[in-house]
Length: 363
Image (cartoon, rainbow, N blue to C red; front, top):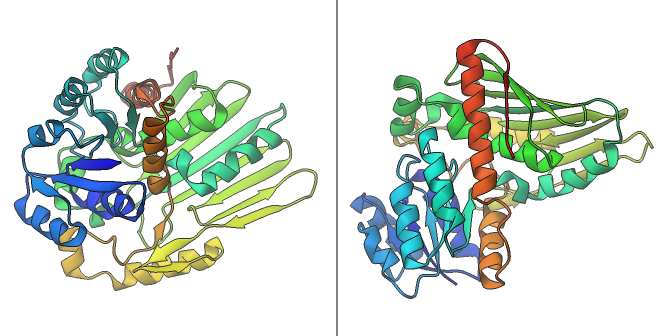
């Protein structure tokens, strides 16, 4: 299947483009970006049929079947409209949009469209989360359940444009980042929260509490005030006198009440070399990488070649999307799920502004 990329910045060039290149079911047809120097570098590495700074050329190309949009989230509607008009199946990187006022327009556009559409909430497509969901279903058997999700990085390592957008201009990481985890929790529990409460810094560095049906309480610790030398993500589920741990996509541990412990590790990559260890060893390698980061790398804001790259589901989600296009299957991470995560983010922001819990109403 021939694929094109619109927006080839650090995230796309560090994740989606190399993942497409590794997938023998995909062929990179076109790369589109406004940065000519970036396009030249990517052309040398991936040899697309062509590179362009005009997205109209991509949508007019009859050979392109699948388009991946990794532009900034404030440039979504023009891409979605072009995809619908040209009949191109469209994958949009998270979040669905940045301005919550655009949710309704996007939802209406896609509800009537005859294309496959998917938003890049990748965590449910990771091997670790695919193991954890059935473990959770088995463990959850009445009673109270508490879920803790840590997603904390280091803002000082962000590319300048993203650092300025969030740290200087106060764009919200609740939209940029926490929507990922809201979608994951919705998927894990097969439900939507009824109430949410946010405390913390507002646009970044927050503790967000969500009440889900079935006596499930989730706490999301979301921030960028830590060191990238410590693993960014960790999931802990406690229910029915058992515990499930997901350690930064490198290891799952489950301690069920029946005493039959579950443990699994997952491959991760460092500078092209694959490892598969427990989470503690992976964390040590992460610290080694952080200690070696150069000022030149920080200035450029790009680390994908040398850092510890865990499987968060980026490869799996693109292959899933390819499969639903080829076999005419329904999309899972569709506009409804994306809009739900964004509505939860809006309520989380409202809660912080009002300094009190707010109701979440999603149908």
